Image (cartoon, rainbow, N blue to C red):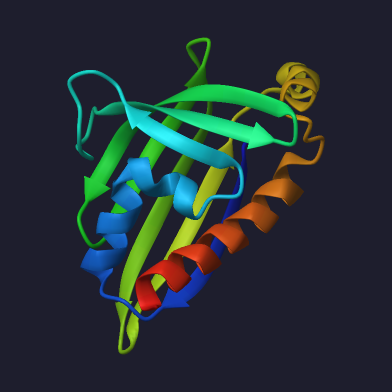
Amino acid sequence: MPQRIEISRDIAASPEAVYAAIADVTRMGEWSVECEACEWHDGFDRAVVGATFDGHNRNGDKTWTTQATIVEAEPGRSFVFECRMFDFHFSTWGYRIEPTDTGCLVTEWSIDLRPESALEYSATMSGIADRAGRNRETMSTTLERLAAALEG
């Protein structure tokens, strides 16, 4: 059963500035707890639907790389990508950006699509048994760091 998690935070920056930061996946390592770096696949250098990139992740001594495909790229509004490993679409991540009087409300969300049969392998590979709890924690930190980078 897919599990969706959403975390929101007000950021005192324009929706366009927030989108530009989020959609530049090469900057993800600046604010993400788990994703250390992202790099575009050959032929891509910006966020457009269909663009692909690798996400290099770490939890302690555990490292893994996922492949992502952008499925939604609406400047100032939304950015969504599907994550795969071994050609298996295991999660979808996104950001929704809504203008406010002081900047915007940014919602980071994820949908965990792993079947029960993949949970043990995933926990062993990443060192994270409670993926939902970990995502809630890291998403909050990601949004805090994003805000600090854009508001400072």
